[in-house]
Amino acid sequence: MKLRLIFSWIFIIAVVAGTGILWAQSQSPAALATSNPVYKPDFSHESDPLLETVIAWDATMKNTNVPAGTASAHFVFYFTNIATHVQTMQVTNVTTMSRTAALALGGKQAAQLMNSTVHETNVVWVTNSVPQPVTIGTVHPSCGCTTAQLPPLPWTLPPGTNSQIGVTVNLAGKFGTVVKTVHVGTDRGSRDLIVQIDILPLVITNLTDAQRAEQMAIARIDRQAVFKNDCATCHLKPGQYKYGKDLYDADCGICHDAVHRASMVPDLHALKVATNQDFWRTWIAHGKAGTFMPAFATSDGGPLSDMQIASLAAYLSSAIPSKVPSPQ
Picture (tube, rainbow, N blue to C red):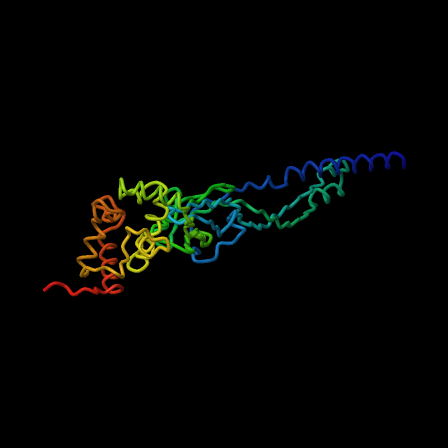
């Protein structure tokens, strides 16, 4: 009798355990179904600093050296969208285990166990880092000589995007060190990209006597030759975008004030004719045929604008006043 009772309890326990497990599985919540919300850029944080955990740049400042006379400088900034959004959520799992196996017992004990259930509650906090898009809404170069090359704005960067922004600086009229910025504004903050260009001075080589004689022979045939080919390095490029004294030192003094000034090149401080602004303007603009004096006006094939010529004439009138009275 006792042996039979023991086997009955073993059977009941096995049935209860198996049934409870099946019941718990049937009552467990289904797998959590989540969906990312629809992305909509919010530029209310554009004025905040753009963190390095949002966009990873290959560099935020770049520099280069260029020789004088270079028309422009170009840079490329490479980047990757590494932005994420941290989601923290609470997941609650309630397990209900019913002892329906008590039916095998019968009688009053079965009735009591039929109404008995066991509830088990588990609470888990889950943290996810979800990759996020980033939208570039504004790009502002620091001045009109600087331009940025990128797709039309707003420019949305999907998670993990690798791309680039080009920056070009117009160097016309510039010398020395030039620093420009490009302000990039996004819905996650903003950052300035900085470029620095060091414009190297022209290196003017000293000519040998043979080279000087060769160039003079060319100038006898074509007085405008000083603005062409290798001669342009000394006679054209140094005076670009300059005015007044700076222009004189670059374009005029190189011949008229040279240590090895040719005998047929006059000393402007010892002229034996009356001078004034009109005198200087005419000579500078049109030169003199049959001599080494080229025409500097663009209308005559030279490199200087009317404004540059006027600035030179004004400077010469002041710096080298006429030593001969003007005819009455």
